[in-house]
Length: 194
Ligand code: AMP
Image (cartoon, rainbow, N blue to C red; front, side):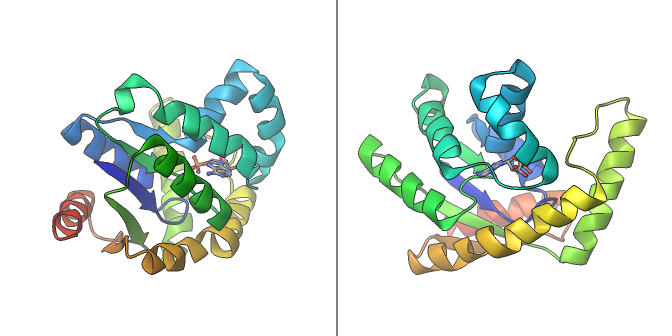
């Protein structure tokens, strides 16, 4: 199964991706996780990405397209993958389409998690509280200012992807405000009826 999860920051893409990867035995490809790993490793990509990530802006298409293309070529992606946080712009979606064509692969669907944006800030705040309570490390961009910027970037650059994938006939919308298990079940339902 090759799937894209679309939706604003805090919509639950990461959570759903984790559940689906365990069920289907395929990896979650989170460009955010890959970029955070590059920052932590202090690599060239990490150095170029850090400041823009911390502020809530978007890293260049060129960087993310390349890391995704290389990741898809790895052996664990042979049976599929779930893209979480990529593509995030129409040019990225076009680049993805080109790279999949080149690799002889096709998508099974694009799931759009629809959420009430006001609830997202509350979700972000409770995620921060839970992380702190569990003794974990809070993301540098999980603060109200960066989160607002991430939402703005989403509205301006990522939300148009819903129209893009509606146009290709691949878009499936799911209510992302339902409880976690219900959202997973709904994602599987819309993919079966695709
Ligand atoms: P995420 O974990 O998906 O919320 O991503 C965290 C941050 O990484 C974003 O706010 C961006 O700065 C950067 N990022 C992740 N994925 C992408 C992408 N596909 N395009 C550009 N920037 C990205």
